[in-house]
Amino acid sequence: MNPSPSSTPAPLHFYFDFISPFGYFASLRIEPLAARHGRTVEWHAMLLGVSVLKVMGLKPLLDTPLKGDYIRRDAKRYMRRHGLQIHRDLDAPVMDPRAAGRAFYWVKQHHPELAAPLAHAIYHAYWAEGRDLSTAEAVAAIALPEGLDAQRLREGVESEEARQLLRSAVEASLQAGIFGSPTVVVDGEPFWGVENLGLVDQWLASGGW
Image 1 (cartoon, helix red, strand yellow):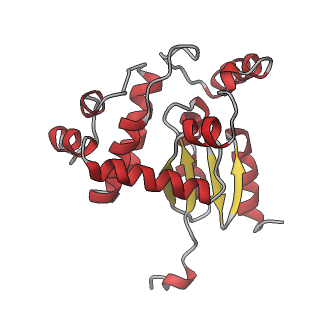
Image 2 (image 1 turned 120 degrees about the vertical axis):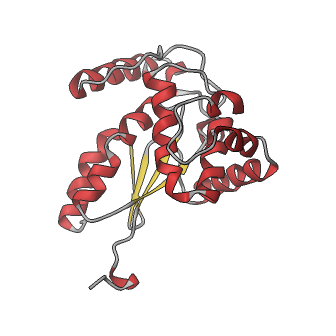
Image 3 (image 1 turned 90 degrees about the horizontal axis):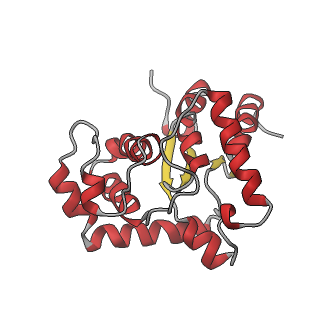
């Protein structure tokens, strides 16, 4: 017998920016983590350029004196620990993430079952392959999830609908208090940073504290 909607555990809300290396790292772990506790994942692309630069008035982490050097070391240490390799230099020019964000939300609107697979594909292309995905053409040219047409995706990314979907989602993330990538919200409780995924695991296992 299937559980009633009221007894179905709420999804984990996973907020990320495609330009965030730590968001990429978390994207590789969030679904298995959620599945261990009978949860699903609701993916939400956000824009650090809005939350950090415009709203908080801060510099990007890598441009921040002292902290930037630590972040570089921490990212490399994380990759060694988890056996990951990327082909994008952490100090390479950062792409404009809006095309990727629009692609994600256009797909989430029209093919919701493909939104998470597309997020994985974009993350892999940007970080693991080191590709620039700052245009609709570039996003449509990656290895797309099966069932997603490249031409329709390109047209979707360039549509006013996709622009509005991204704007609305970014505003919603700010209203929810999201400022960094990755952030996982568990039953209303936010956890920022890939290093807190272990804490998310413990929270779910214990029922919180």
